[in-house]
Amino acid sequence: MLVRGEPVVRGVLEATLEELALVGYGALRIEDVAARAGVNKTTIYRRWPMKQELVDAALHSVTVARIIQPDTGSLRGDLLEIGRHMATLMSSAEGQALRRILIAEERNPEFMAIAGLLRESMDALPLPVIEAARTRGELAPGLESVLPFQVLAASVQHRLFMERRGIDEGYLEQLVDLILLGALAPDKRK
Amino acid sequence: MLVRGEPVVRGVLEATLEELALVGYGALRIEDVAARAGVNKTTIYRRWPMKQELVDAALHSVTVARIIQPDTGSLRGDLLEIGRHMATLMSSAEGQALRRILIAEERNPEFMAIAGLLRESMDALPLPVIEAARTRGELAPGLESVLPFQVLAASVQHRLFMERRGIDEGYLEQLVDLILLGALAPDKRK
Image (cartoon, rainbow over all chains, first blue to last red; front, side, top):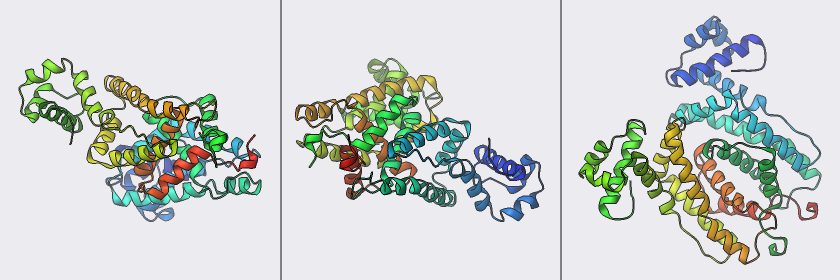
């Protein structure tokens, strides 16, 4: 798996994800992560004193740390960029491993608390894009402004993993245009 | 699990889903389904000569056979009805078992072929609702008309299983209104 940052940090976080995918959260041991990364376990404990912190950092390294902040000048352009980028991330080996880990651990309360923190960080990511769109006067009044981004993420994920269909530019444009313009005929809006 | 239809058919399809959840598609044996359902295995073979047909019927019994066809007189009303119903189905014990089976078998090509047929049947379900909306002149011209239903299903599923948040009436209305009206301010549409 590919994680950015200093080489040692990167090696440890990659090793954490690999161990997590292999043995699960409950059985994950810092010793095994250290052995896999080829570092002393004190190197890990110094930076991440608790297993939760290490796993949290590993999950962030392949999600939050990878997400781009587009600035195309329009909400449509930004949504398309985000959609393309999410499709690439989710289709990658890390994206698929992460999905399997999240599903495998969905009944583990300690892991789900970490996943909840990850979700909060993810929810905050589109805020600059939302703010820019609001400044340009692009957003419909009264709109729950995180919703378009959640719908985009849900639809990309559903298409890739449940429908098992690819995401091409044509699909992405239809999806973004539905999110922006809605399904109703213009004369049926009030 | 609760399956509708004649008692014997119902018992066999319920037993099929239970075995599927327990041993997986590859290891599923008609003999074990028969034993679980308390019927002779020839009773099963007579109706479903192949394992694929039995599994296909079992998957349909908790999905396609359960989906309602709303007729509220408006696309908004119909989407809300479908959303409520999907949230109930997906949250049920059968819905959760089905999701786990689909995920567990996602790398089994024979099972995925059956899941592909199921998806085609699911995609056809909103056609009467789409047709009614088109007749009332409610749909935007040029819209890929299955897309709003896929986005609704994806969003409900994502919220329940990935975000682990409930679906209440307030969320459902916001979601349906986004799908119908879009996120753009009225003066930004061209």
